[in-house]
Length: 181
Image 1 (cartoon, helix red, strand yellow):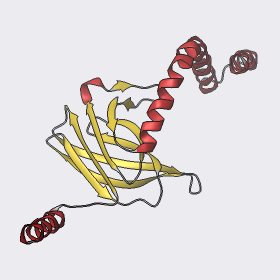
Image 2 (tube, rainbow, N blue to C red):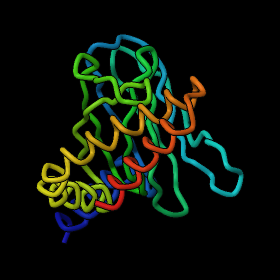
Image 3 (tube, rainbow, N blue to C red):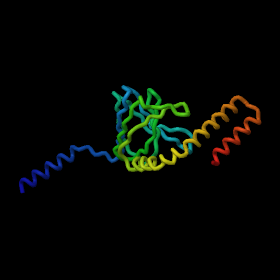
């Protein structure tokens, strides 16, 4: 009886020492950046603007954020210096991010996309499975996307240069044709 009581008291004392967090814990390691800042934001459609959700300091390439969310949400993550970004689904779970600033690549909008490994969170895992299922379709559509982007950039350049109407309509027709096919 006495040994059972000692085990029970020891168990209670050990469980009191363990920190439980019912919200989210987002921790990460970003190689290639010693110190910086990480900003999590989302686009508020009602306000028609980007809203900061949370910020943290990166020290020696590592960061940690803790909090509680009312509902899961897709967030854009911006890392400075370097202005590299990625997105993830945030929910009340333990989520870990690993990335390397050397692998950040310029995107077509003038920013940088940082490929990262994300572990944790049920919704993020579902997104990763969904993205893997979409990959063969994206590969199949790649030639069309490249043609579309080329036509769209020519259209934008033409509009900026106030090109003659006939060139504008020709580019717009090509863009529309690519959109439908």
